[in-house]
Length: 128
Image (cartoon, rainbow, N blue to C red):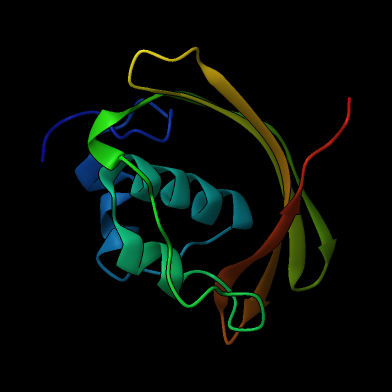
């Protein structure tokens, strides 16, 4: 794939999220979060489950009508370490399903690093 990576950094997919989707280790929680966004765009459910912490991972993920979903972009608002092996990433992702109005998903995600790998734990929806 030579297309620009969906994560918003403007790099080719093969030099951005592609290696993470193929098994490389994300260096930061933000890199993992961006790769998870790209996985949603690409419909890569296996990657989403593999990068979700075992304590909070659902048994399965339903992406709904993935063919009708058009992802419009990702904005990372902040990334901060909250401990030696924990971090938060605040982001806004926008998407549309079919002809419906665009949806703005604003989340503050929590991540932990175990055995050198980052995992998504959970997220909150800020009210501001």
